Length: 411
Image (cartoon, rainbow, N blue to C red; front, side, top):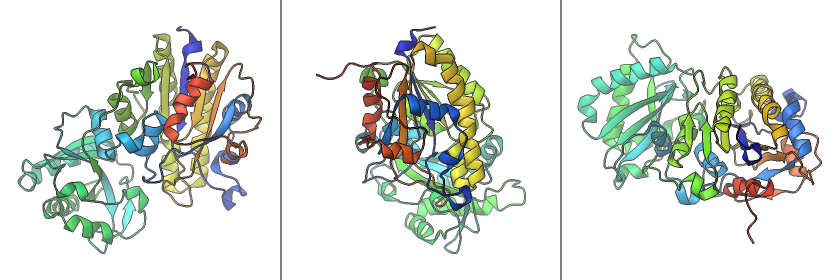
C-alpha cells in the first residue's frame, strides 16, 4: 500500500443536512440515524460548518460540489449542463451552449401544467436512452443542426445548442425541476415560449411521449442549467495530490474529469439507496493501493431521499452511508494515519424537498489530532456549537489538507 500518511479521504453524503422534524421527535435525519462511525470521527477530530454556496448563486449540487472540490464557483462555474458534458467527454465548440436535460413527468406540458416528478419515476437508463433515440429521429426536422440530444444516466441527459452561447438562448432561465415539485410550471412554459425554436422541439416531444407506446412515466423534456463548456485548473497542480472521484452521477464525475482527476466508474452505482456501496469502497482502496493520494467519494442517495420527502428513507440512506462507506474505510485506513474529511454538499430538507443554502456540517479527523472539537456526534447542531466556520466553502479542502499535515502551512 502507498504511504497512507499521504492519503486523504473526502466522504460526501449528498444532501444529508436537514432541519429538525416533528416526525423524528424534533431531530434532523442525521441526529435520528444510527451513525456510530461518523460520530466517532466527530469525537476524534475538528467539527464545524462550511458555507458551500455563495450568496449570489443558487444552492445547486453543481455549485456546492465544485466548492467542495476546492474551486471557486464564482470564478469557474458556467452552468450545470457543461459539468455533465465534461463527464461524458463531449467534444464541444467554445460557443456551444450545453443544457442539463431531464426526462420529467408533468400533469401536462402547458401553462396549466404542474411538475409531478423530476425523475420520471427514476426511469431506467436503458428506457431513457431508447426514448431519446426515438425523439432524435422523430424531431430531426425541427432540431436540424441547431440542437442535439446526448443520453446520460437515468433521467439525467444533455441538450447541446450549437454556436448558441452568444445568442438569446444563453439568457433562458427555467427552474431546476427538483425545485418545483408539485408546483405550477406556468412561469417556465412562458419562458420556453420566448424561444420559439426550442419551444417547438419541447412541445412536439411532449406529444410524442404521450403515445401509448411509451411504457415509462416520462412525458416531457426539461432543459435547464445551460452554459459554455467548463474549464478547471488541474487538481494536482492546485493541491499537490493525485486525486480520484468516485460517484454515480455525471455532475460529480464531470467536475473530476475537468480537473484532471481519475474518474472511476463503479458497476451498480445508481445514485439511489440500492447503489453499490461496497464497490465504491473497493475502488477507493484500489486507487490508494496503486499510489493514489486523495479520494473524493460521493453518495447521492441522501439527496434523492430528501427530494422524495420521506424522512424514514433519508434516515436509512444516512445509516447505509455510515455503515457501508465510512465504517469500512475507517477500518481499512484509520490506523495507517489517513485523514478523513466528512460532509455534505448542501441541505436537502424533507420539508422543502429541494436544496437550501444552510452551511453544511463537516468533520476533519486523523489519528493524532491533538485538539479535537469535543463533540459527541456528527450533526448540524454539533457542528454549529463549535464556532468553527469555513467561508468561502472552496477553501475547505485546502484548509483540511493543511490542518491534517498533508500540506505545509503558508508562511
